[in-house]
Length: 489
Image 1 (tube, one colour):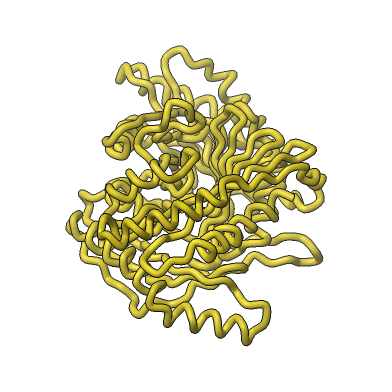
Image 2: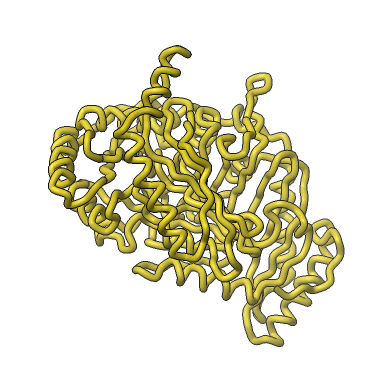
């Protein structure tokens, strides 16, 4: 990426900012190519979710990502009744550049879009800080093509935000991105950058907990097709018995209606309080639909050429007492059915990473990932990543894992579309970010909901293998759905 000399504090000096943008515009004219300018600035600690609340607009796309303590041993806490978060959080607001695609090559096309953008990017500012520099935010639907009746979210979306605010521990960085060509009005741009920065900085010590009215009570909760779901489980078990496939993940939905419009920020704030173990996420399409959730499942992250991913499959509820909780945990660890389901996922991940030339290192035996209302069998996996393999290459190879689809994968996906009565869209699909150095993190969009106005559709699924019981699988799904339902009310 090109580097243009600049003063240390561009944002604080409007004249210096104008001169820097002028130099970038000259580079655009010389190359006859739009240049992307990315400026990073450290600011006093603030809450990225508060920034999302303050400057996001419903007609602009956004992405929010907050990492729970399950992966980082960082615990958000309550102090004097107020929420204090010490982990990673990123808010990406509006798009400086935006790309969509569908079809079997959507991941490679997304990677090429990122590569092309970075070729024409000029960076400035505090690039030594975590989350500094340009970051690209991505969402992919479960299937490579949407059904015609569902066009809420494209099969692949990648965008470079106009504004990114990120926090790690007690340090916070703002990244402003803009596209410059020969016609850009530099006076207007520099004034807008300066004014928007002031709106963000003033949010230091802003307390979200004091800012929201509670969402209205639900006037309807429709749990549809329970009998059909149980019948689908029975049919799937018959197919497993006849060896058509080994596993399938069947999902279920709940539709809810509120007396008042659902509050996105209120829901995200409740999710991070109620589920500090999980990844809290939201992405909006700028058309009134937002996909939010609290996912325990990391699909993959790369930091300094080291991949970390998880085999996460096999579930049990948490106990109401310490003794009951210990008994449930012990039963999960020793369940032949749950361990078999977990092993299917583990073997798949190792096989797919090996196809890319990676050498996965496991952390056996399977351990417990214990969340607030559910616990899972969990095997962390790491691998060294060569320079010619990108995070999106890995995402394309892994998605969907048997944890959210089944095995064999292609057959399971065909059967999912036959059994399920709804379009999965972003449910159980990859969501994440990639920075200018190739680092990044993707999660799986489970324990999730689509919200629009005063309506929400909540999603959850269960893995069906030999030995599954239809009633127990439905009970597991209802348990998972409670996480989202409690956040909305």
